[in-house]
Length: 345
Ligand code: NCD
Ligand code: ZN
Image (cartoon, rainbow, N blue to C red):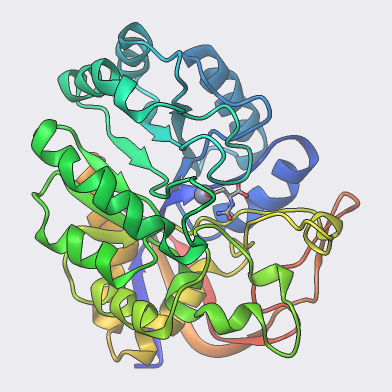
């Protein structure tokens, strides 16, 4: 297959930031996705319905009408059931994001005591608002490559039993154990998978020297984990769907003695997924993963527009300049073997 036309995809995990960065990055997403779940880890974070309403307006102003931002709230120790009810009533908030405090970029305000969140989880279950989880423990004594599996064992496995109607998205899964858990979990549990965790393993962090642009959280894992994610994504199981976790950082904050976590892939996210699926001989599963399974899990209508991809190399620039902000994208200076030809009604 040298070309494929799919329903316009949705990105179920995206960082678009704010201000000049937002204005720079959003066009890449709009050219490829009809909707995206917008991560709330701004500084300060998006914690109230009115924060989300204002952020949504700022996104819409630059994105235009063809794109729908699906807003989320950032869960803190102070979030209460009233906020959850108000979020559901808003109609534009589609999930609540749990960052264990300190787990990743801008997560200081995140949850310190998971045990204290039961009333909030119950309220989410009641109003049917999905819980999106950055599933890593923050305990510095735990090996960084084990933080997802330890979180899984300590917390996540028990959650569906305790809250059987709560819809849970295990975000950006990175391990074979994570994929196996989702496969065996009840249908209320789903997972997003990023293009970089499908295409890279942890060796990519150290090719000829340290590679800060391949550093993200959860950190890249072993080749066996990558292969398990490839199997899950291309399996046709609707509980796995696309969430790019495109997370732009200015070049100097990544090429730094203490470089930020986050990989920018919005410039070619669909093409990277196409390349991954093609390498598995599974292009026939691409549309379900990119454009259908996530929408169904979130209870959203399917998009009508279409996107046509062709097998044709595209050369990725070394960096993008967004109003003076330099962002080094995934595959910087290299090629991707699929390209977008057209988006149409
Ligand atoms: C994200 C960011 O930069 O906001 N970074 C990342 O490495 N993925 C935060 C996150 O999703 O963990
Ligand atoms: Zn993220």
